[in-house]
Image 1 (tube, helix red, strand yellow):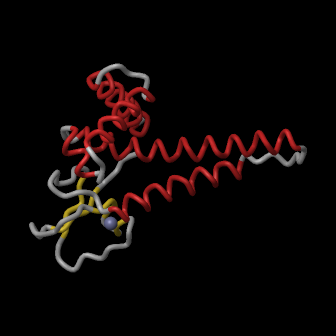
Image 2 (cartoon, rainbow, N blue to C red):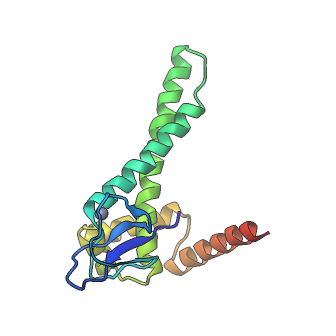
Length: 162
Ligand SMILES: [Zn+2]
């Protein structure tokens, strides 16, 4: 999932929003000129509302997916399994969204401290989230992680072009 950022060209602006040319996730309207970029200025944390909206959007998508695979059968076992699957999908969506924001920051070369500042979390939380995300990706080092992501993105691009 590619995350792009929108931020004011005014150096006094305090936050970066998640969004694109058409708008921000939180609905913020720029009155002055702004930049759209894959990188965010490290000194500006991401808008909390944008983070919340991005999480909400991922959950909505997961819920929709759960509904699409719903089984017409109504017995209790099927229903329980379905509830468990739905819960798992929601957790996975939340994790994926969280990981996407962390990966976007790491791709810019931000250090742990800067990642923490951008995502409004303490340093220890950031370090824990980063290592959890890394473990989930099934890699042992950041180098391996970056290589894996780069490889996957290269393949995706190759498919898009062919
Ligand atoms: Zn925002």
